[in-house]
Amino acid sequence: METQKRFEVLVAGRGPAGLAASIALAERGIEVVSLAPVGASPALARAEMLSLAVEAILARLGLGDVLARAVRLRGVERHWNRARPELQDGLSPDAAGPGWSVDRADLQEALTTRAAALGVTEAQGQIRGVAGQPGRWRVTLPNGGSLDARFLVDATGRPAALARRLGAKLRFGLPLLARVWTATAPAPSRLVAKAEPDGWRYTLPHPAGGASVGWLTRPGLVRDAPPSFASTRAQDARSMQLSPVAGPGWLAAGDSAAAFDPIASQGLFNALSGGFFAGNAAADAVRGAPENITVYRLLTERTAARTHHLIPSQYAASGYRTSFWAERAQQTILSKGVTYGL
Ligand SMILES: Cc1cc2nc3c(=O)[nH]c(=O)nc-3n(C[C@H](O)[C@H](O)[C@H](O)COP(=O)(O)OP(=O)(O)OC[C@H]3O[C@@H](n4cnc5c(N)ncnc54)[C@H](O)[C@@H]3O)c2cc1C
Image 1 (cartoon, rainbow, N blue to C red):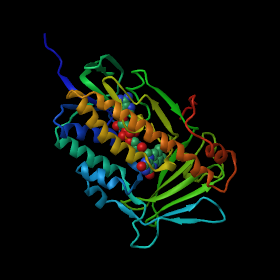
Image 2 (cartoon, rainbow, N blue to C red):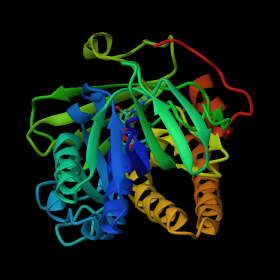
Image 3 (cartoon, protein in one colour):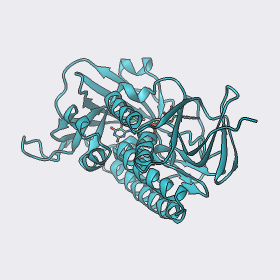
Image 4 (cartoon, helix red, strand yellow):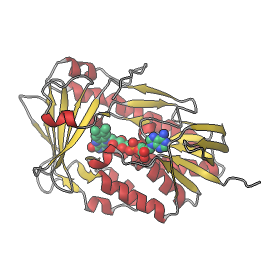
């Protein structure tokens, strides 16, 4: 009887976290399969801000040239308090600035090319189920097929599709919806963020020209929204926390481990650096050092807790006292999830 090939590690999700993990694993000589459904993520249409700290991790992943094609941001203009706009991080040409605005499609392409060059196997499909035990997992797919692996990495983003099937629980922050569209008019090379009574918006220059404009509000609120609001797809943008972020024979990385309200500008750094460390911890585990999974879990959970803790102070700094701002000024991760349809 023909036996099915068993991979050493299966990485579910081909976003920044999944690809960073796959690259780290392949660099360590681990046989890795990267699983994701067909179809582009809405994130690929937008520009996102990368903090300065991301330079080292991109260089380590062999992707330093992504920043050469990004827009170097020269500051942050924050209209948080109507009476007093703030200019942060220096707007002078020689100041370091807060980071870069990167084309998500360009970042995705660079990560995909690097993973393929290292021999990562690609598989298509959405997870239908997980069976087995550490060392002998079987992930089933909708077409009736399956993939076998010794270790599982969940990098499926906010759904945390593997970890939840393995018993981990998600906790959520207050509901927050994002709509992002492209403005064709040229934008200054800085992040502009503006508070509104029922939400906030930002403008980020897009490396391909024009700007990505984002509007964040809570579900059901469209007051004062720009006309483009109604025609764009709503995306879940609330903070989330998985617990635990790792267990015997598996771990989660990026948004599936912890997702942050975009006000924190932490998502990509968390996905790239978390994915890289997740890949290395998974490599250690399959090479006989499973205790490094505990180190990864503690580091990831504590770092995320610190970021969740800092988010309310950004809302508290606004001049608005409407319910949108007041609730979020006190928000940390809620103990019970709130569900809503998109
Ligand atoms: C509006 C908005 C603006 C943002 N702006 C910024 C910003 O300026 N700067 C910043 O740093 N961060 C920003 N973020 C956050 C950032 O986009 C995310 O943190 C980042 O994409 C997370 O990467 P990831 O790889 O963990 O997940 P994702 O990018 O979500 O990738 C998940 C992958 O898993 C796959 N997948 C999903 N379900 C399954 C399944 N069942 N089976 C198999 N595969 C599956 C998907 O197809 C995808 O390949 C923003 C987020 C939003 C919503």
